Image (cartoon, rainbow, N blue to C red; front, side, top):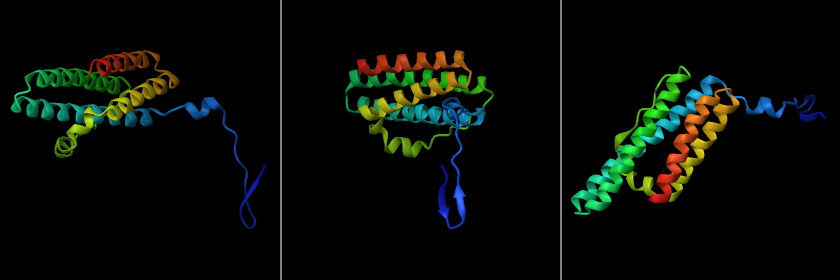
Length: 153
C-alpha cells in the first residue's frame, strides 16, 4: 500500500523482518555500552560524595553502606569496560564530575536504580541478538548483582 506524501510523490513502505529490526551494529553497541559505563561512573562519583557527606554528618553506618555500594558500582563499571573492550570498542565515557556531584542525591532514587537495571538488561538482550551470547551472560550477571543490591538498599 503506497502513501502519498506530496503531490506526485508516493512512499511505499518497505517490509523488514522482526530479526532485521533487532540487529545492532557493533558501533551502536559500543555507543550504548559507553553510555552505560558513563552512567555507572557518574553513580560512583555521586556515591563517593554522599558517603563523604554522611561521614561528615556523623552517620557512619550510612557512610559505610554508601561506600560499599560505591565499590560494587565501580566493579560493575570495570566489568562494562571489559565488555566494551571485548567487542573492540573505544572507551569514551568521561564523566562531568561537577554535574555528578550536584545531582548526587538522584543516584539514590528508586527511579535511577530501576532505570539502570532496565538499561543493562536491555543491553544484554541487544548483545544476545547481535550474536555475543557470552557477553550477554556477563551483562546479566551485572544485572543480577544490581537487583540484589537494590533489594538490600
